[in-house]
Amino acid sequence: MRVPLPPSFPYFTEVYDVADPFEMVFFYAYRPLWLCARAIQFVHNEEVSPHLPPLHIWTQLVEELQQWHRERPREFQPMLELEMDDQLAGPERSFPVVLFANGAGLFGNQIYHTAMLMLLHNRPRTARIADFHSVAMSPLWHAQRICSIALHNDSRECWDPCLLASFLLAARRMTHESQQHEVLRGFDRIRTVTGWDANNSLQRLRAEWCLLDET
Image (cartoon, rainbow, N blue to C red; front, side, top):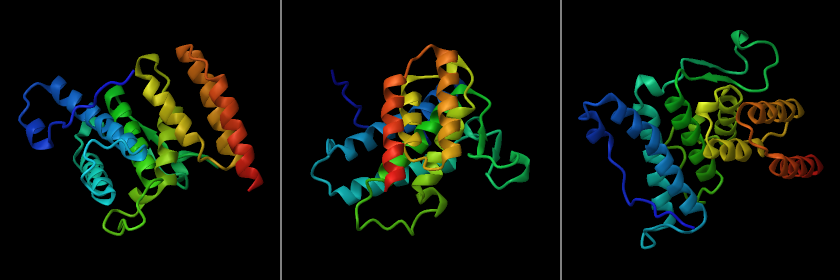
């Protein structure tokens, strides 16, 4: 079954005029989800605008995602963000620390990083990434943040199948043994919190990690 994707989503200028704070939160939470769906269409060559060249579509998606990230309101910004080399993060951390105060901020940011991760792994050869912020053009940077957000999500109400799939996608990029162990412990916690059994997916994940070790 396929759910048709809306051809457009309200722009930020329209959101600024919204007086209802709940409606504002809805827009900022679900705009990255819409862009992530567009990214999936692009990756699978199912773009709704086939007359446009792939480079144009890719650049437009990246620009809109970066705009969302720049202009997200305070409710969608992390309440704590520490890099792995920050002493406050603790000794020998496998992931950065990225914490959010609410489920909408957590959801929107994890989906933003997921969309960027997919687009960067399917970047057209002629795409100019020098025009964008350098850190935001690193697939590993996005993958590590997805893992961090997922690993710190201990609320059942904040979990969604989209976030589980996002975590699995990012986990495939983790090559360090300490990261892999932390990811597996994270999936154990998710099963405890939500009751979701991802054993089949984890078996495939372990197999992919073994292949990475052999290359």
